Image (cartoon, rainbow, N blue to C red):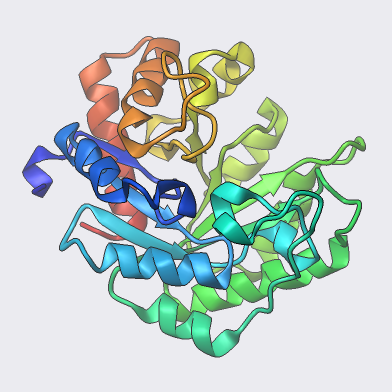
Length: 283
């Protein structure tokens, strides 16, 4: 699909995951037919390598993001969609090693447009460590600075009353020298204002098609700081809830953002796609 046909951009999805092994080419094809460009986001070294390999199959329209998910700083829950047949019920996967040589090579690839998903996830802390996550996060920021590519952030609050967004903001302010996007953003209006002052971008998933808790932030944000995503294969939007998500469904996310903001749908559609191209340095 040529850039002239581009209507939507799914800035965060996982078409590189084993969840699509049976029909990956068809999934990508449906996205292109719908006018959707996309990224393939790594969460481990194997899925990051798979992201680059997939992106290299397409001249344009599909790009890689490479890195290690914060929960993989320690032994973590085995997700069949992410690691396929390696996942066994009740068995954790080993912690990922930040292999600087491999990640530098992946980051330098011309089809790699960002580093991530990386950040802080305090939701599941039974086997995780805040100190290990922060150390891994800083390594990713340094990798992004060196590569001159933006950060795709995964930041999720825990069950205590502290704000992981404020913790992430402090680290970004000290170390980051590149743009950054808060994927699947779920922060408060106060946190949004703090992050806006740091120059952050914010992307939203299919949750905005059925949950109204995001409306206030989406209305408040400047349009040029908003991007759309699916986080596929997870969190399918209305009217596809309960199904495996895919990049083509990002259209529903964009439509909902336009409805929430009350703007011209075509203007929002064009702006969100343009925002993504600029963020990733594709234009």
